[in-house]
Length: 266
Length: 209
Image (tube, rainbow over all chains, first blue to last red; front, side):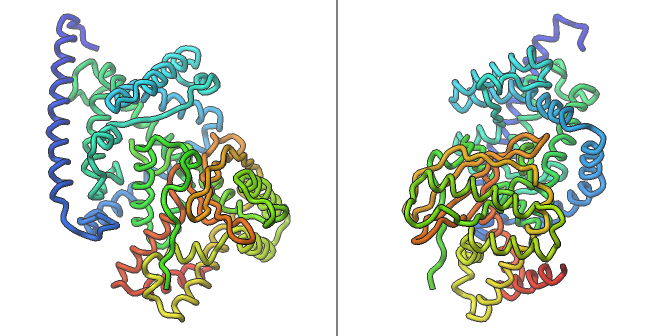
């Protein structure tokens, strides 16, 4: 939205560099905290569990009063095909950033796929509302900066429950910050003004992505909530899901069972 | 935005596949290779859906049918032991017996009641992996509920001496057995390392019907 077209380019570049530095600094932080992780329960790797559980309860309260009601209202008022289109548009907007991460992970073929999807769906798919690419043999995939850090060797411990954003780790927190500020769609929308809070498009996009995502996970999360320990179930599911995303493997059917289904003998 | 499950995750399909527990009709001891594991899952998943989503089914009848399907299609005692992890060894005979009984009841109660949700579910076997050293194969399944995007499930099938048994279902990379094991282990640890803490929680859950 800048009228000073001569300044927009350099300003955007500066903003980009500033963000890059901030993210590198956070990355170093993540590396430190991984190296110095206190020895807690080896399996859970959750040294600040009591604090995390507290944040989890606060988030859960917010979800009860905001997340679930909004997602339920959205489901009740917007018909299936329209909701699918919204979800398509949301995931379409992530594709340029997915492509950047594909490149950072050395996955050039996948980066090409992501860009081809973006081009096809943004045009013939009417701003991403219809997934034309999938029907033409280009299935969806999603990469974020946390996954990129993982392929660079950063581990996903210890567990961290973030206010509002939910399950995470130092690595994935750095990833979230990068996802927010370096996503090309956001950079372009904010026109280089990184600390701008008033960008209607970016806020709308964030809000729609949240409600659409929560609607899609209503049953899945409710399933975990019904169990014996909701917090532990979310922690376990989050970690497994991240590991699966990092592996870029849709199914274990190609490689066979990933772990042995063993039981302790007496 | 990092969510636990992808936007495609649909629990009802997870349940459908869990119920992919199946009558071992036809898939007998004679023929057992990868393709059979696939057809074991597909034909019998449909069976489960047909039987359990039948209209006018009383709650008691639904539970009974599910119990039968589950016992035949799943290796319940093996799953129960896997889920208890290292605590199985430290459990007394009485604790083990009660745990097995409660686990069985928990699964029946959790899943049997929700079958009317997915009478429109369709499952399609995509591929079957090669067996590992335990003779486990992963059957990749695509589940579709009308109006929703498809969900990918990995059904883990063990080829025992006499029949196929489902031992785990993963939805979008999240194994139900591993999640439940982590959950149970947390309950026990928070209860001071006593298995009784888990048993109390399960009794509570199963008793409150």
